[in-house]
Image (cartoon, rainbow, N blue to C red):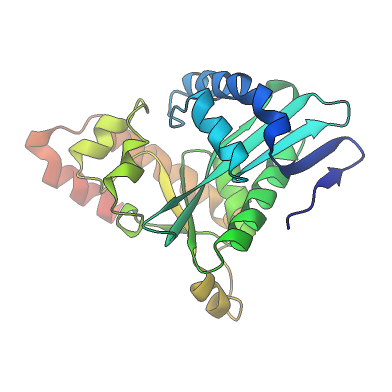
Length: 233
């Protein structure tokens, strides 16, 4: 059982339930507005879908102690539980930069490990902040080919403004970075030096600038050359 967590006597972070169904529409609206503001995509979800996740016990919600909504995240499974994704992380604008996103992601990670202990936990993101959180939880960057091959997984990207990049490169490249926590690999990595996000973040920012410059102007006629540029950058 994943017990609720009270953070600094300000917020409660817990597995969502039927008492949180009323928040679904607000959460979906905020997801959409956040994606528009960043110019990239969070897979668009309906309030019904979010409600289903709450009722299945596959969502995390953060609230103030007075009952105001603060943030949300849900989990999805792919390939019969081989992969688990912590998706749709969103924080109300009034509570951003408070550290609550880290708590929500940590609780979603805990829930994923409890429900699917042998699954690889995956994510795709353009956000440096989310990459930092994921790195602290033990995720490592991976190529997109290491993510689920299931078409249903990639269908969730269709509402992203950059979906055409993904399709034009046959799912080899996108502005998003794939990340993965492999429980088996993690056992081995505990003996080795972990990937240091803070140390490598400047390199990652440079890589993102190069990738964006190349992918935003790629076209079928020079696809091979541009993909070679990415592989050697």
